[in-house]
Length: 209
Ligand code: PRP
Ligand code: URA
Image: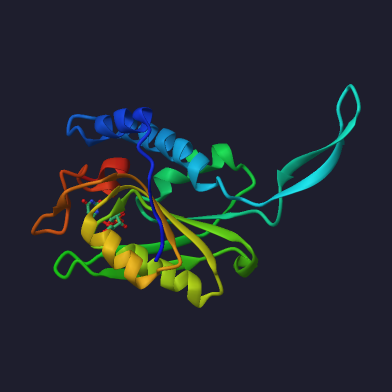
């Protein structure tokens, strides 16, 4: 079974509470999302492999560690996941970006795929799938299935707010994928929105309310 990592540092809780407030503007919402994504990226990348390299300081030659392997890949689930990419890029500027477009059908709440473009060589790269919301878990599960069908193996999922229902669905569908979240909320409502949640993340980021 995958591991569920709750990243609830006080600064993250504070910023997430600001994001939840209905009166928070789109501009502030986007900035807070970027900041939280950057903080969470420290934990999500904690186990990246290192390799020893020889460098020369002003004093002497020495062997020190640097990140090993090919550049990792950030995969935002469109639209809302886009709001997390810049925060991750601030920590990992060399990361490549793949895009998966999914929207939830308003009646069935099931994800509908409309776009998938991933970088070359994903089979040898670490992948971090990002989306602020894990509600029913359908979008995250389908996105990860698409990545696996194209050869991706080493995958993590990072969100801000997760519902218990979505965590269960994702862990059952992809037991090999660790989940990183800043909060585990109470439940879903009759429209499959997270309670208390923060509303529709895509609409709040892009001002399409
Ligand atoms: C939201 C959110 C997730 C999905 C989560 O996207 O950004 O992708 O819903 O819900 P789920 O876990 O029940 O699948 P939405 O479908 O509203 O599309 P948007 O980002 O384009 O607004
Ligand atoms: N998508 C969102 O943006 N918010 C929710 O609460 C559920 C799905």
